[in-house]
Amino acid sequence: MSSSRQSDIFYKHFIFWKVFGLWSGRKPNKNYKYYSFIYILITLVIYNVLLTLNLAFTPREIEYLIPEVIFYFTEIAVTSKVFMIIIMRDKILEAFSLMDGEELGSDDENSRKIVHNANANYRTYWKSFAAISHAAYLSQVLVPVVLHFIFHTKLDLPICKYNFLNDEIRNRYFLFWFIYQSWGMYGHMIYNVTVDSFIAGLLVNAIIQLKILNAKLSRLKLSHQEKKLSSDIQEKIQMLRLRKCLVRYDVILKYCEIIQNIMDKTMFVVFGMSSLIICVVLCGLLLVIIFQSR
Image 1 (cartoon, rainbow, N blue to C red):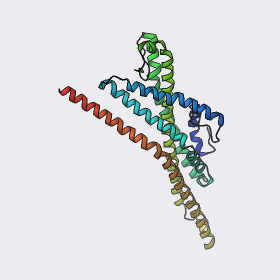
Image 2: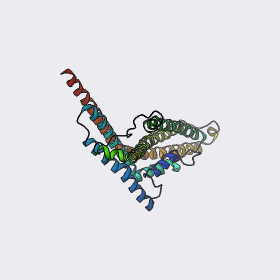
Image 3: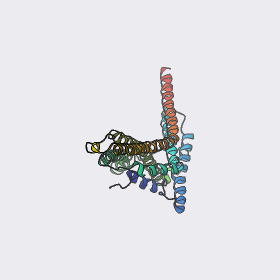
Image 4: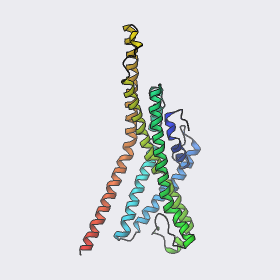
């Protein structure tokens, strides 16, 4: 797709976000707010409440607890990313406004080449990231189903057993729980892929603009033809070019400040959850070593 605006590199992100209740578009939509509220309530809030109940009823044994705790904290990180997009919507739109503004435009062939190459590399990264994530999802959900129908292997719920349910209720509504967990798992995978690659895209655009600015600063000197002009005209040409560079630099600083604010909200939670996961794993390993030494 040919982009008329730099923010169009996130076109596919917007489609996924719209389907999964995160993005109504550049203009708020009242009806979409209801859809977004209901969808996130069912597939994120209730989904995480059920995971919390499952963790609470998980047998107090290391081999059962560690995987559940790790997955639970991973879900907290996913939830933080979702609410980051919702809460920081105005900041994101402000960043898009700067990205698509005239001050950061590609007004010469060299600038357009820099943008084109960077966007092409980013799209390749996005496709690869999405393909690997979908392959991992299918291996967890579709492959067990195929093996079940072909070789009659036991089919378990894709996320967890919902330990708070008794076997009779779990088996009676197995298909419902399987579809619910599978769809929720897919949605959360999409949240991870799109938000992570979205943040990467914002950083890529900052790098693009710094490369363009560097190229423009390196071309402040006059060409051979311009040196033939009067000294006053030469000075005006250089001052005009320098002023454009300074304006671009000022806008780049504003843009970087905005994306820093956007990233701070989610990076703090993600870093905290990652630290907790590492602590849980290390504590689990320590307990295993202690029990084995006895």
